[in-house]
Image (cartoon, rainbow, N blue to C red; front, side, top):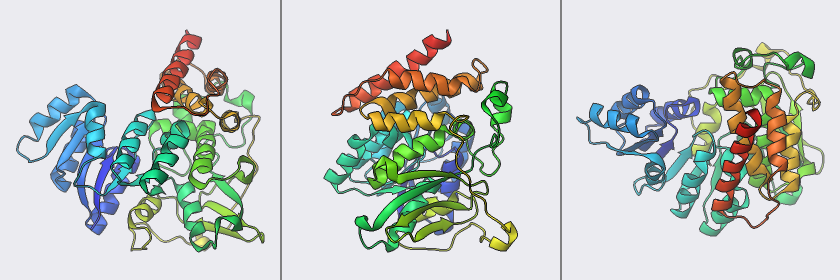
Length: 381
């Protein structure tokens, strides 16, 4: 019986993860959220976790009062988040928090030898070798939850050895602005950018999809997860979001994972691996789709992809800077303080400003993140 510590339980991935836990009667030992008291209270009353954390202290105090009739302990802040990530009663940590806040609890969970089901891409984008080297040292598995990386991981299950792989193919939906040119995106609003054609996601990730920054971040994540050369990772736009990603073997055979666009498939595989179990997701009917389409990305319009590609090519702390700048620029765009097209420019400038230091520490990553965010804020001022 899996015993789960779920970080980020009130977001899109978190609530869908609880659907999977509910279906398979997994024990939910810990829950965390930022400040959504109403949703996490309902989750506590259903799943009866032993420990919960809210990042916002005021919200944590309110929650503590609301659930005083339960046996659940309430903590707050990064200290509480790490307490949940390392909780003795859990064997698997599903990290679905959004942003850099997910890095430290992941590192601490690895030190505590928890199996990591990873939906927080920033952990690998910013943490890079810190995370992968520590996981190897501690003998800890990192199981991908992102649909693309899960698809690659699933496609690799019949792989004879690493040398058999020729290339990884990351598919991208193209977001709501597929086919648009750069000049057409100057005046788009946050409401326009939040209209994703296929996926139901949180605001930050949906904006990342619209700029295609998410695909750049996933490019970096794939590099660390699968230890592939940059030139052997290819991005292909696939509007229907049915082929979630693929691998190409040395004999040019291509193996792909297909399914309806529903995150509960990769979430469940990370939790049940290596087993396959019945899923709450409806079956894919290829006949209903009729045709599947594939296109080259428009790098001139969606410049964020190259920001990330260049960041990982330059190495060091450049990916951490690109990620930190993006979190800040997306926030400013959602607040109406910058244009949609400013996001790529700000991310690139902050990324170029970072250090090439290869043997970096957690403190270096956190400082780079802070500097990149400040760069964006000052540039906008």
